Length: 97
Image 1: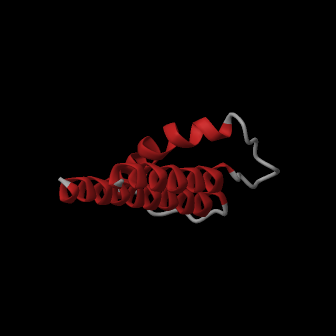
Image 2: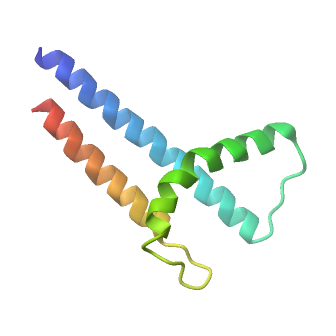
């Protein structure tokens, strides 16, 4: 039974890692758009950017309610990633036992 618990905990940590990478990719893409880097129109690029936005924004919106941007800097993704990593690790440790 311990093996199944370890597998579930490892799976959860992998999901947290993938979601963190998606958020990071969204933040980088948003930053590039903010500084004026524009990719040529492409349906594939728009689909990827739309996917990143749709996946990341609901979670980031939670933190943006409490952490307003300071000028042009939005620190909510940093806090969101830290919270995601910490909570993911706590839950994985609780599952692992």
